[in-house]
Length: 261
Image 1: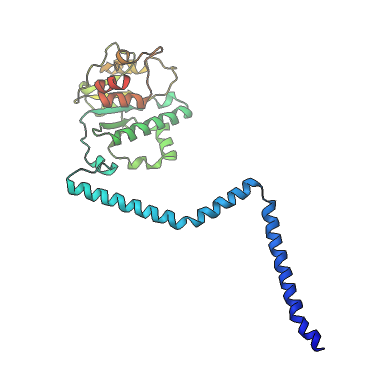
Image 2: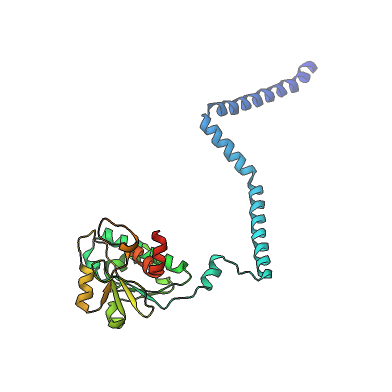
């Protein structure tokens, strides 16, 4: 009887070892059943977790380094060229740039959305430049406004943009207006900062040729085309997207020359 009782712990210990071996065998079996890609992914995940603290420390060091650099620049009297500081030091131009959105009813919804994207690019580029123009969206209503309300509700917070539901010729003097249209026989040689340059807000795929030129003639205002022929060889009509015309006008013919080279 004593002998049997003495042997019991040994039997129990043996059972635990067997269970442990079975568990390890099961885990090994699971690992072996993983594909090579799964094992690689698992290893990568483990390494990512192990290096979490190291990444955190590196981010902290980079942040501290940038802070020291800014302090050193301030002590040396060097202006920091970060985006926010650059925007505050911008000198606005008195030149007015107008996008005439009165062609809304001539476009299908798909093209109205394309126009919206082009206007977004215009806004972004104008915000980044050192000499932003006075940016206007006139006849801002209808489909375009609906699209902007649905897709980009933040447009109401855009800075340095004048949204006008009225037509451009009703809010500006006619003698100050110059409609930029590729059909005009007049070639723009220099920009006058006292003028307001109008761009037709129309994505038409050449379905409405001459419409902006006709609008300028109908209103009895000045018109001109950008001097693209002098700097860029174009096999088709010299028609640009809204954001391309905006960039050309804002930079001026001189800057356009350098871009075309």
